[in-house]
Length: 548
Ligand code: ATP
Ligand code: MG
Ligand code: MG
Image (cartoon, rainbow, N blue to C red; front, side, top):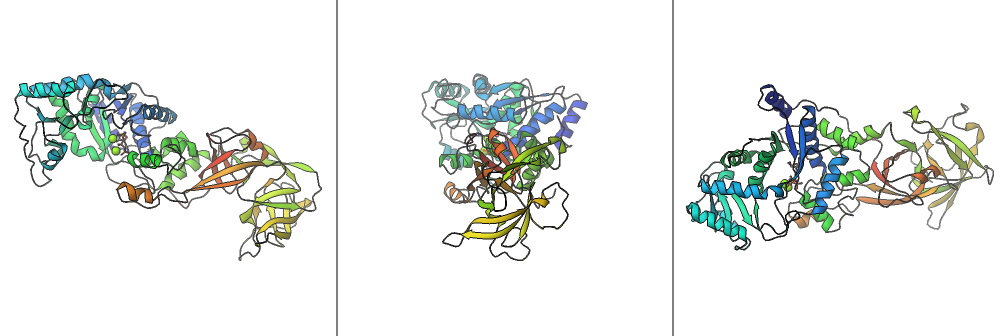
């Protein structure tokens, strides 16, 4: 595996190893199974797995499943699949919910030490009395309950005697702390809900901020890497580990989360797109999910290189989406078979070509990688060209077909447009051309030159195919309320075209990737493609103005 360039987290790990503070690096990737993973998660996955691997350490996959209402086994399975597909192998596979018993016992330790109490206030009241950055919070009237009373009430919460929201367990720290997160944060709440892993065993659930440090400590995680929003939580993280008397002390380090232009990076919003059927599921190729990127045609290598190259920083930034596109082009450039596809066909009859004859022309499979060899493509009297490659009245510098003009057909001959057949609306529906047998590709013909080379597919052998072209799903940054967000879905985010590919393309399988001459890179759709009617998702066009 390749190693990441140096970054501040790597420097910390290097020092910790050198000083003997840490013998083996243990990291974790801790998704909440409440949705599918997106490209932002890929960054965290790469960071955690590659960091540990570089120091010959280990990485756990841990499901942070402390919120029963939003979690589902479907998400657990998809997350496992995505991590494996990215090319990583976890050491331990853990569920935070398997630690509920231990977490409960740790909460009892806090109560016995007078460091936690049961509060009868509602969530709203607790929020309202938290204070602000400049004003201290107010102490709860229940803050000074005795240890015995707290033990009894907490047990009563656990036994199911308290309705949802009836009581919470709070840490007793400091309502005047300058760090709002230390103003008696909630540790446990009552939720009478079925949990995907623990079923109906529990009706109290730990809050993320309490559970996470315990999970890290239980697993012996050395470097607990999270995003910058959790920086202010670190004092509480350390408090939990210390006051719960955990044997192992993990440390939290924060880095800036990945943001990408024109890309929705929130599971909540992505779920909304799925639920409202704005997309064809979590793996819709327009989705920035790992499964969507996979179905679109991204490779694990391209995603990993992207994550590595954007680096790890502590300052907010937004990465240009074209950078991701750059890395898939780079990955496929020498690997993908380069063939011809006509996305919007216009029929061309080559009037001086013998009827009923087919010849097989030699075509290189990848002009930049001769090792990929050649293939044979058919050529006969009728072919399809791209509708855009013909104009009745071209503007200056249009070098493709127009009446009287000659172009080269890629891998074949020069053809000259002699006659245009129009429909009643004046649209060209068929061209009559002549070809010049002297101009065959590879024959060394130098008699005259043409300025345009266009692609084509032989009509009698062509395989009908569907092409799906994509644009950003959300064009503008929407306000954060759900409604206006959905109103920003780009109505042109998917364009479906019916055209033709070369006959050799009949044997494709889902996930095969090609470069179609002049159109870009395409992936065979793993769900909808059939040999009779292959479906190609455009991964990315050929060129970008973006330079790294
Ligand atoms: P979202 O905000 O999209 O709902 P999340 O942070 O709630 O994501 P988790 O399942 O809790 O989702 O995330 C698992 C891990 O992935 C966490 O460690 C989190 O910090 C990290 N992560 C999530 N989004 C990003 C991102 N955009 N960039 C980097 N890391 C991320
Ligand atoms: Mg989260
Ligand atoms: Mg979130």
